[in-house]
Length: 300
Image: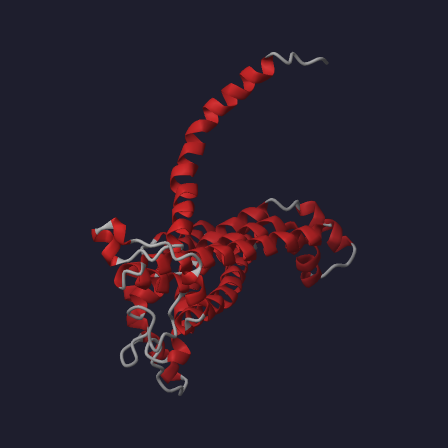
């Protein structure tokens, strides 16, 4: 069927008219801040520039070269990778286990348990931190009381560099797995029961059903949650800020986001903080691209 080419420009104008509000919001609150951060990272913008913008000097890539030589940055980056590579898979594993349990016929009052598991996700971090700081208290905390029942000595969870990051990861998993659980449940409900019935007729066991049907059918959900969790966990800031007083003990919980905050709003090295933000953004972009590439190869 022939298409009237005279209608095309009008349709394009109509489409642009309806897209304009969204594009404007994206430009103002996404593209513009990114451009501003990149430009700011090329300057020595500091507290003196706040008083007089003429004090700002363009320093090129000096902030990035300083970044590469800064041991505190590498410490924060190592802590961030630790948090992402341990906390991310652990969060998704707990979420998947909870989803499988609630999707099975073993549990009654499924709606109640879904609400209970999802509640931490919508609870403010400050409230969660207060509860966990009490649980982690070296003398009176509930967690150490449980350990003492098994003859295990009390642990200074937030005061020991060895245990501080695992303690924060445990908090993050407990707070965030509920959202992933809801999406996994939705994915499980979308899998046709006929696939499981056909596999059972062929003699497949529970483990084979999980490996050959459940996991492949949940691949899009895994990809979405993997990217979302990776992006969120790379930016983790509030957990160490609230729980350990800003990255302690001995910088064991200092994240890259927290270092960026300290450089920018505590030490007023805004240009250097912007350079940290640019590097962190590139790391997040690289990890997200890697996840998409792995998924594309798996489906090839």
